[in-house]
Every structure is written in structure tokens, then in C-alpha cells.
Length: 143
Picture 1: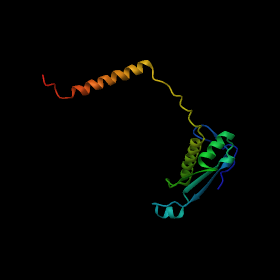
Picture 2 (picture 1 turned 120 degrees about the vertical axis):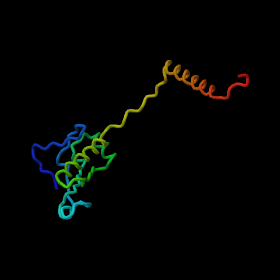
Picture 3 (picture 1 turned 45 degrees about the vertical axis):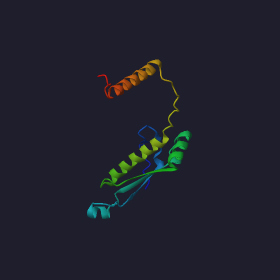
Picture 4 (picture 1 turned 90 degrees about the vertical axis):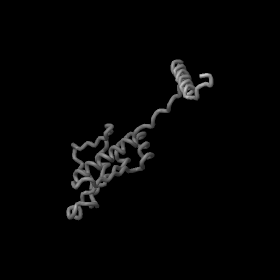
């Protein structure tokens, strides 16, 4: 099933990326597990799919997402007995996955050297540790 393409529907990821609603589709199926007759007759489990090519993302972001997760992002939910709630949960998960895949890689770390104070503190700590270990030994024979 495709979502209704009404003028007021706007999909935004948690990071604020705008997603074209036409890129989202969902399917309801029967969920397993407890629930008795209700679970056996109701299509409450939901699978939400977003097609990356139809999202309207910038080319560089789209390339990162496709490289990370492929051409589609999929999420399932069957936690609730309500199809509406499962659809909301699955949409939330799929948008979070899309955001995670779209995040730029972290900047490469530029190596730095420790400052003078840090070097002195490290040597002071080493001397203190050595003294502490020396004092743990047996007493000298003349004591």
C-alpha cells in the first residue's frame, strides 16, 4: 500500500532531512506471537520501505546512503496490536536508519603531540608509581 499523496504530508528524518512521501511504501501482514483470535485474523504487522532514488536527497547524500544500506531501506514492526501504531514505529525506525546511513564520515584525526605540562605530569606519576612499588618490598636488612 502506498501512502496517500496529500498536500499536507511531509516526512522528515530526526536530523531534519526532507523525504518525498512518494518514496515510502508499506505493507501490512499478519503478525505472529500471542494475541489469540485477534492476531490470527488481523493484519497488524507492518513493513515500511523507502526507495532511496525517489527520496529527493542531494546526490552526495544519496550516494552515501546507497553505499551504506543499498537502494532501499526497510523496517518492520509488530510490537503493537494496532496496525496504525506499528506503521508509526516502522516509519520512525526506517527514518532513523536513513539518517544514520546519510551521516557524513567523521573527519580524519589530526595527530597532536602532548604539551610540556602533560609530559611533566606523566613523568611525575611514573616516579610516584615507582616509589610506591619500591616501598612495598621487603624492609632492608639493617632495619
